[in-house]
View 1 (spheres, one colour):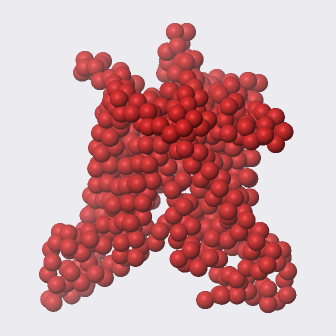
View 2: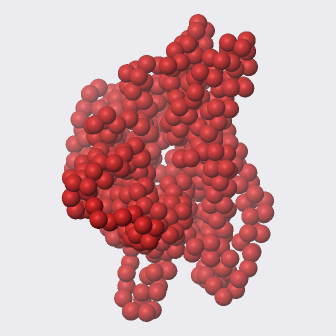
Length: 291
Length: 279
């Protein structure tokens, strides 16, 4: 009880605390700098490199050829298709997840917890396997085809089409939309909704002017969590799209593994990262706190 | 509190209830059918031909599958142990201390969570290729990709997930208890060991199980950084699927699903210990 909290003592204490925090963070800091930040930087650097005639990479010759290549019709089509499919996927997820989350938030606690567990299971289950399940269902001889044949609609032929890709993406990422949306709707100040009703607003008006704006952080978080992985999807287009209509993810992989044009692959990856960072910054600026 | 607004009426209630039911059917019908067909005695997948366990027997006897499973388990355990330690330390640092560069560190820690798989995969591929070239020119040693590069990559994305789960746990916890322990002459280590650690343990277990699941499920990144002999089960299965469907894949898939479900349930139990929230 002798130590008096003099400013000097407090400042020294603060410094000690700050150093301790830094030391605690250090191992993860070093690890992520070495095995995450450095690889990330090398992708950006390589996107400005030159591809040599042998398929190697020359770092001396800086250029933006790889980026101008993104304007070529083939690549532009792939970019356009990927963005379109990712947007469609996000919208479908939002349309399904919003009422779902609202319903979930209005249940009593015990029901809600059970319902949540059954959303968590697909959220955690193997993505590859869940896409594979649709491959089995949609196959020539699969159960979906037999049902549609049974009711006279003929064989289902959506496997290996963009429709199948969207279906697989929605199936894979729907929990990513539900969980943040539910968190936002549940956290909302429900008395504001009551107030709106009391003041004579219709259900629709209340939704547009009160409920939806209040749940906006959840809508944005969910949309980012669905849109970003959909845009860079690789597994789903390979399994359900048959790898025919290429998407961004498959294109990057091809550039790295088959075409051996690393600078172009790196440029497309960089674009994908910029989109991701832009979306995330938008989210935090709109008042979101955690994803 | 706000009982009225949460009470849904008439049509709204029915419409929302119907939507919720359809969402659950959408989630579970494909999985249920996949499980059903994995027991079907018909070489054509997606057709019922009587009950059989043949495909599971094939799963147990297939040496390639077994060795891939072995690699998966080894990588998952190693990457989980390392990422739990580093992730928990990072979580404590960010929630309990303010230090120089903590904003930057926070951002760096978020990136692996939101970066698309494919981007991270090419990053790691590029990095290991550069590292290999550098090692052979500078030290004259050959470090080709293998189980180690897969593990290194898995740790790189798992740390972030662990730290998010642990941080959520620490954030809901008062600092007062640790201070009280120290006032009662516990050393800093004792305060951590007997007060902080038991309190954040559910978060650590939850984060660890998440890391385990992510490692066991990853296919895109692993495919890029695996060398010969370090094929994991998902990468092997992905290769099989690209050649076509087969009842063997059905059986392997069901085993992988069962493992995921088991891990989720374990993590829910861990997080609900001491009244944590489900999410």
